[in-house]
Structures are given as C-alpha cells and as structure tokens.
Image (cartoon, rainbow, N blue to C red; front, side, top):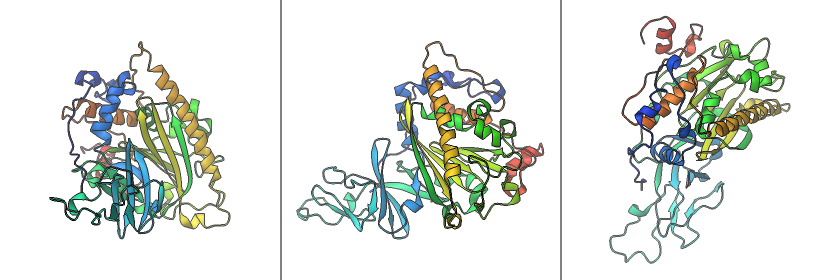
Length: 420
C-alpha cells in the first residue's frame, strides 16, 4: 500500500518580500534572512513541504547486496526499511498495519520476510501481508489492502534515494543532467572504506552553503588550500537541468589527490579517469541532503540530516574502487584523515555562523563574486520559501576549458557566448 502523502502547498511562513533580495542576480543579491536559519516554524515548513516530498539520499546499494538484506533508518522522525526483494529495491514505513508497532528493531540484517514482534502479523519482502490468524471472518478486510506502507525508491551510481510523496517528481527530472556528467565513471562499482559521523550545531542550509564555496578556504583550511588553492577553484563548472549545482577545484603542482600529503602512494585512480580528470576534484550539492565529491581515486558523499533549526547530523563516507581495496598496500587513512580535519574545520565555522546570525541586530550580508554556487542554493531555498510559482533564473559560470567529454550543450553555448 502506498503512503497517502501527495505533494501539497502548505502556507509558507516566509513572505515573498523577505527573500526578494536573495532572488536578485548574484552581484546584486543579499543572503537569506537570518530567521530561515533559526525559526522552528520555518524549519517545520521545510520538513513538511520539502523533505517529505523530495528525493532523499539514504544509503548505498552495497548496504543491501542480497535478497532479504535490509537497513532500517530513522528519517526525520519516521522509521524506514530499505530492503532488496529479489531484483529490486523496496522501501517501507517500519509500521505494522495491525496496531502500528515497529516491526524491525535492528539497524540492518537479512530476513526472508518481516514479522511484527507484537501479534506476529507477517509480510513478505514485497510488503504483502500473509493472512493473519483470526482475520479470516472479518468483514471488508483484505490482505492486499493491508500490506506495508510503500515508499518510492530509486538508485543511481550505487546511491539509494527514497521519496515519501505518493506522486513525486520523477527521479530522472530531479537529478536531470547530473547523471550524464558522471555516468561514465561506473560509481556503482565503488565500495565504502571509511564512514565518519558528526553532530553539528548548525542549520542544515548553512552546511550546504559552506560546502558550496572555497572563499573561506585560505583562512579555515590551510591543508586543503595548500593542495588546491582557492584561486584555482572553479576550474570546471558543470551545468544542466535538475536540482543540483556542481563546481570543481584544481590541484596545484604535482599533487594527485586530496589527502594529508596530496599523493596517491601507488593507490590507483578510478579506472574511468581520463587525463583531463586527474587534476580536478568535482563537488556538488544535490537537493536537499546530498553533498557529492568526486576525486581522482575516490568518491566522497555527505548525508545532511537536520534535527531542528539549530542542529544536524552529517555522515561522511569515502568510496574506492574494489580493485584498489584488494591491494595488500591499500590504505585510505590519508584521505580519511584529510577529510576529517577539513570537516571539523567546516563545522566549527558553521557553528560560529549559527551563533552569530542569532543576534537580533544581524542584517544579511552580500555575496562575494565567487559564491555563485552558494547563491544558486539560496535561490532554490528562496523560491521554495516564497512558494509563488516563480523560478528565479541563475547563470553558472562555466569556463571555456571544460573537457569536451563532460561539457553539456548549455555549457558550450555559455562558453562561446551563444544563447543557451
């Protein structure tokens, strides 16, 4: 049974005028009003209007490799089971249809079906209810109508997404051209080597903003800025349809990757990397909760899970090619340590921002000219808060030196000065 949660338009607590300054072109715009980072009413609107209707990144396919493998996660107050049923992924609310007890109690496992620990109502991997005892004489009762609540689930590049909406925007429309930019890398083949989890006292949107620029890197990230100086940010910008934005950083000198010393030490790059890729690190936000970063030798993702207006959990994971991981000298500690240092530096300044913008005297500042990706994210936030049906145009800044194999038609048009 599908969850009966159709896309709705609840009344936004933010008026159009409050976000009008953010919806201006980058060089004229001001940042989002402070209360969108602090007001619990705004936060609840975001959960109800966005997170319960958008595609959310929840896990990797490698977490559920075999029929019956499952993970169970708490997602914004809802317990969700993601399971592999034969040749397809399924997602359900972790709720028995009898008296509403939670069925699954472990975070992961492998089962042949699901049985409620309360009254033993049993469901197969496709969520279908098997006839419970003492229900065969009930009037107007059918097992078909009492299966587990289904959620929409899709995967791309080994990344698994769910959607609570009963009639969501199509997944292909959500990711749009992003898939085409990275399809050739066969990212579904990669496997997790490192997982780091952080509790951050910051609004979730501030974390995405921080990820979207390196204006702060010289002062905040001395190690990162040494390998890829801030002035080399934006070597390639990728554009296209979908709810995402992507830029890149360029490694200087003979540095090969983002790790504590910047070198691979014999660790192979991803087999799909071409010469043009080897000096770039691509980083993207995908609305609303996925941060995606492709390095020459690994993929890094961050899941951003808000708790309330003032705090969030961030899960950072690093994925390498299995051929590299099988080598006896494989050692992911350099990249893992590098990103743990960098993450903690980021969370510190995000918490400083969260504390500072709480001041009653704070007035939103202006964007720097190199904060285009921040502005794109904030414009998406502003449009969704205004909820007036207007999509504010933004123009990313692709460069003419983008490798042809990853340049979209729109990028080519912008790079040559033609209309897109």
